[in-house]
Length: 388
Image (tube, rainbow, N blue to C red; front, side):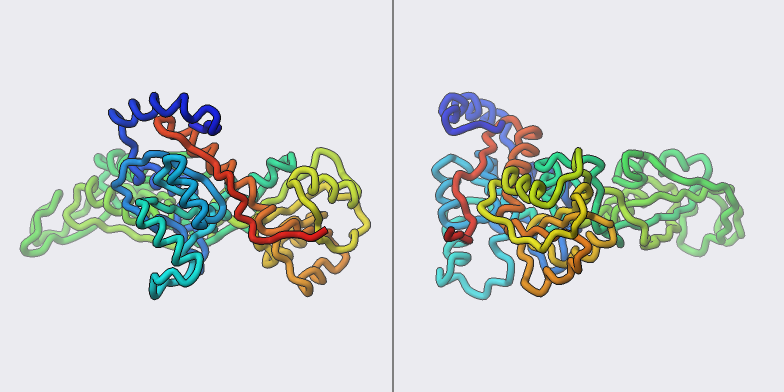
């Protein structure tokens, strides 16, 4: 449950009683988060996942944040949480020693000493439409929200060949393992009938046919799509459900776009706004002190592209999407030239663009898990300050 500190004491006794009889494991929270934004969706340079702690621990509470610092670890301890769910990975590059020489090493040491588990959900959460950029769109009240830069290479197609009488049971096993989902449709497959042939050799135990005789069997060719990260589970289910001793199947990588996966989003404002009015809206909704931006393109802003964090690499995607404005963070001087008078680029800051991710994490976890406290950090971890 998502509760304020003022109500924390009132709820502690009930939560403690409930969790005593029904302890929730950290592995349960990890499983939920990875069902939402699987680690396979993270970029190659990233380090999302469980960084410290044991997934077998009972969870006493969750603290959600953007960045993990020593102060956040202490806050988790003080507020009775042994799991920190953060957007940014504390351990980003490999650690060769733990001597406390910088804040990362000190924080890792502190978390280990205090038995605090740390889970990072970073670019994998950037790559789902219900993630970081999607929450930015919600804050701005955008409609018809779509992925800005769709992610490819996430899907496989499985072909297998099953005796006609067993086709239904094999299909169901594949569906149960996570295959056959296309957007909001489930149990999707294509089936064609044909004839399979084989000759069983010495030492075999054929399900149909006789040894050393050519056999022809009426079979169904079953085709299903599946996410790459479900490959092991789906193949295991296929082998378990299929009646043949040796199962024939093919796996093919697809270039198809999986709906809802990719970086950034686009959407539409309820009404077009002039540049100054749009910039004022950004300041209001994101609580900004300032906005770095390019000169006005001279046209009203209606279609908006968004990317939380450092999104300079998606300027070309925003232009290709014919967005009137692109809102992100961490733009460098020369990258502003890429607007080329065709689009308004607004840099609202890295932390500022991702700040509502804390709310997003807390809301999702509180809705799913009701037997312990899900809290939001009270510490502003933004390392950037502005002198006005």
